[in-house]
Length: 602
Image 1 (cartoon, helix red, strand yellow):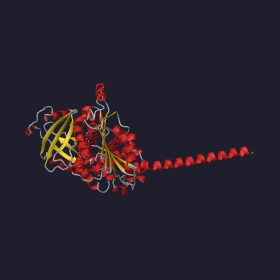
Image 2 (cartoon, one colour; image 1 turned 60 degrees about the vertical axis):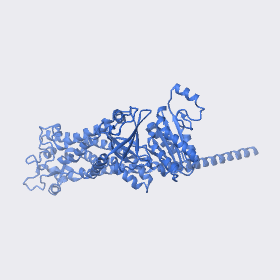
Image 3 (cartoon, helix red, strand yellow; image 1 turned 90 degrees about the horizontal axis):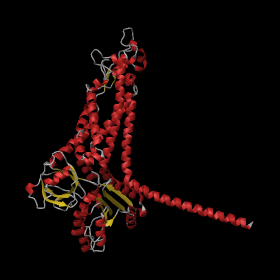
Image 4 (cartoon, helix red, strand yellow; image 1 turned 90 degrees about the vertical axis):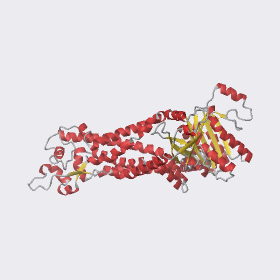
C-alpha cells in the first residue's frame, strides 16, 4: 500500500513539473513572438496597410461598377450581352483607378520633395517612398490583369452583337433591339449596324477598336520588355519601349469617345419600363394605345480623362523640371579609370546640392540623346564636387568610357571631354543613415557605391570637423567576387582607418570585407602573406575574410552589443541577399532590438 501511494505521489510530481515546464515554454514563446511581431510591424506594417487599401479600392470599384450595370437602365443592353456587359465595365473602372496611380511612383522630383517633407515627421512613411518601383510594378500587373478581363469580356460582347444581327427574326427581342436607330442612327443600341459586317471590321474602323488595339499592343511591349532578363541585358530595349506609355495614355483618354456601350436614356425609362415592356416589344410605338414607346439609347460620356488628367499634368511638370536641369552646364573635372573596369567621373554643376546616398541620371549626348542611366553618387555632401563610379558592363557604358578617354593613361584636356547632362539628385533609403544610433551597411560588388558617400561624410563630420553625430556605431560589410574590385575603394578605407587610429575613435566604424570567390594561385599568395601586418588584398590592417558572412551570427552579435536600440540595416545588392537580410531583420529580437531593413531601389 505504501509503495502504491509513493508511486502515485511521484507521478503527480512529474505531472506538475511537466505542466510548469510547458507553462514556461508558452511564456517564452509568447515573449519571443511579441518582439518578432514588433520587428515585422516596424518593417512591413505600413507597406501591408497601403497594399491592403489599394486592393480594397480595386475590389470596391469592381463590385460597385459590376452592380451598377445590373440596374434598369442597362436592362436592354443585358438582353443583348448578358453579364458580359458588367464583366467588361467593372475592370474598366479599375483600369481608370490604376492608370491614375501608375505615373505617380515615377515622378522622381515629387517623391524627393515628399521624402524631404515627411521625413522629419515619420521615417517609416518616408521609407515607403523608397519602394516606389515595387509599387509601380504591382500597379502595372494589376493594369495587365484588368486589361485581359476587359478584352475577353468585349470579345464575347462583339460576338453577341453579331449574333443579334445574324438572327434576323422579328419575334426575337435582340434582333428588334439591334434594328433600333437604323434610320438616322441617332439612338442605336447595337454598334454592328448590319448583318453584312463582321467584328473585325468594327474593331479597326471605330475609335474604341483602334485605340483598344493600340493600348493593348503598347501594354504588351512595355510589360514584356520590363522583364528582369531583358532590362539587365538589353537596357536600351527596355528604355525605348517604356516610352510607349505616351501612346498608351493617348489611346486611353480617347478610348471611350465612341460610346459603343450604350444604355437606355433616363427620359426613355419613363415611356418604356423594361420590366413591363420587354415582353410586349411587338407593341412598341404602335398607335393602338400602347404605353410602351420605342426605347432610346445613348452612351456614357468618356470618364477616363477625369481620372488621369491630374497625374498626367504632374508628370508633364516633372519632365519640364528634368528638361530644365538637364540643360544646366556640367563640367567634368577629373576622369579616373579604376581596376575591375570601373570609371570614376568627378563633376561640378552650379547650384548642385546633394545628401549621402543619393543618385543622379546621366545622359551623354555624344553617345545617345535619348538614354538616361541612373548612378549612385559616391562623393560626400561636404566635397566641392560630385562623383559617380560607373562599371563598364554594356554598350552605353562602353561608349561613355571611350568618349571620356578612360582607356588612356595621360590626362585629357577638359575641352576634349564629352558634354554630360545631369538630372537629380534624387533621394534613396541611404539618406536615413544618420537617423539611426546603430547602422549596418551591406554592399555587394559595385553596390558599395552609396556607402562610399556615407563613409566619406562620416570622415568629414566625425574625424575632420569633430562634429557630434547621432550615429554612434557603423558596421560595414562589403562582399566582392574578385580582388580587383577592392582596389578603387581601398584608398578611402585606408584613409578612414589611419584617421580613426590617429583620433582614437577606432570603435566608431567596424568593417568586414569578404572575398566570395578566388583562384588557386590567389589562395597560395594569401596564405604566404597572411601573417603580414597589412592585408595583402586591400592594404588594410583589418584582414579580408573569405567566403560569405554568417548573417545569423552577425545580427546576433549586433543585437547583443546594442540592446534596446533601433538598428538601421541598409543594403545595396542583389535580391537574394536582400531577402536573407530582411529575414534576419525580422527574426532577431534579442534585447528588444529592432532591425529596420532598408534597400536601395532605383
